[in-house]
Image 1: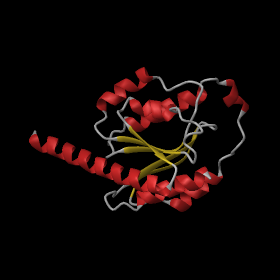
Image 2: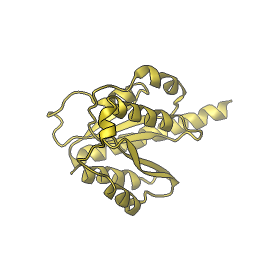
Image 3: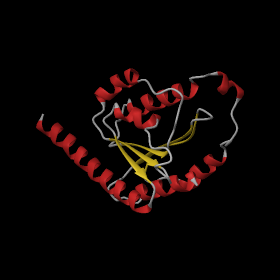
Image 4: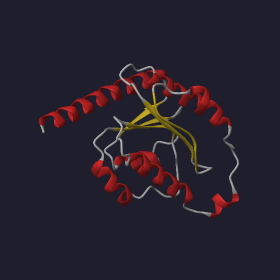
Length: 185
């Protein structure tokens, strides 16, 4: 069910004509690994993404991972800092997925140096079929707060349409503002 929701979110984003290039990172927090990476492509390669997702071992946790009490938080922290500190900054960073409840939160003090350099919008498209079942903020929601990110809860198709429309509008405004700032120099 979560996979279908994520594919719907990605398909909606990929259909937006304002987006010319895509970089995609799919990860599995339980395995603490990046499952799929696609950088700077004209379109999202859904068949390759599907093959990569089939390699996941859902419901299986490596004993070494269980021994590392903070491994999932460290993995998420490293992933966020790596994606936010790219030499070629993106027009936006979008996290999409179901709520991710970790025992420890991503340390805000670790993200602060990266947040100061971010001049692009950050979004979190949180898929929750029943948002009232878990009404509190999750680990990604708290992490994007450091970047003044915007969170959208997606539980129905209209939520997806609204969030993507608003996201596109914010990205376009942000990009125009950066271009104007560069031209003013």
